[in-house]
Image (tube, rainbow, N blue to C red; front, side, top):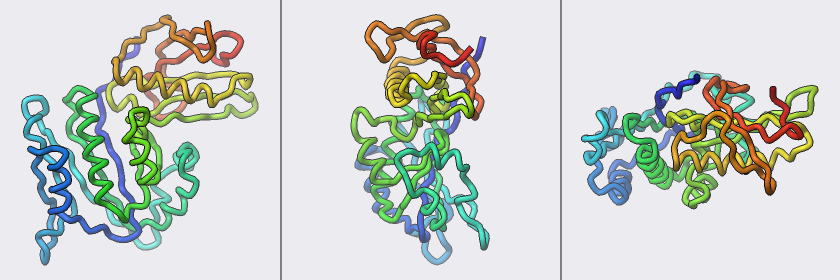
Amino acid sequence: MHNIPAPLSLQCAFYFQEKPILNNHAIETAIQHVFPTAQVGMLNPTENNHSQPSGMMFAYPELRNESMLSTILLSPTQALLPGQSYLNSVTENMIQQSWSLKNAANLLQSSSHRLLLIDQLFDLPWKKRFAYYHLTLQTLLKNFPTCQLIEWVNSQELIEPQHYLNISQTEQGYLYGAINVRLYRVSGQGDHVIDTLGMHVFGLPDLQCHVKNNLDPDLIIQHLYLYANYLFEQGDILQDNETVDGIFPSQVWTCRREISLVEPQRLVINFNPGAEFYAGI
């Protein structure tokens, strides 16, 4: 039996070509427009300008009965040393699996500053927790006009900011960025491994399917994203040997819990689409 891991911290990084100016008043106003009772604090204001913090803390008093810390932090990461680049902080795999962004390497190379948004709401129910983080992230991004790239750390996806805002504010794109659907071609065999990355952050299993080359992987990608949204709403409800609808009429997929084929190692629900298409054991 495989156990579900404890929820991890949600993390998203903002990349800037030049040091960003955090307008404390504007950000506080924007946050309180979305969360009227929110309290916004400054982290490490500069000695000469107490209104210009290096980071910020967002506290949500209405959550204190449910969450011990009830805060989300915005903090700068360690400054780059001469000759260093943020390109060295991500893997080639992450760049390849960030489908919507074709110039990720150039944007990372040209960035000189990075802020990290970290949630401390892991004791909240996952849907409520993500709703607070999601809206806080969107609000900040609208106040960071010079942000040229965001990185969803947990799902290992790099996204252009406006593209993220456009999609994530739609019902179908609510989990965009938080959940990444990845595609891997198995060398020498011609088959594919498609998986989701990001569900594990909420204490939910990710999804995986290992298929032969006679099945269009794009169809699997779309189907896994739909099931990821379904499980995010319904919870961890799929058990071993349970069946779900496949991508064709009358086709069913059989579920089995196992450890992921692709790193990072985590619990997944592996879908078997039948002997004709399945490349797993």
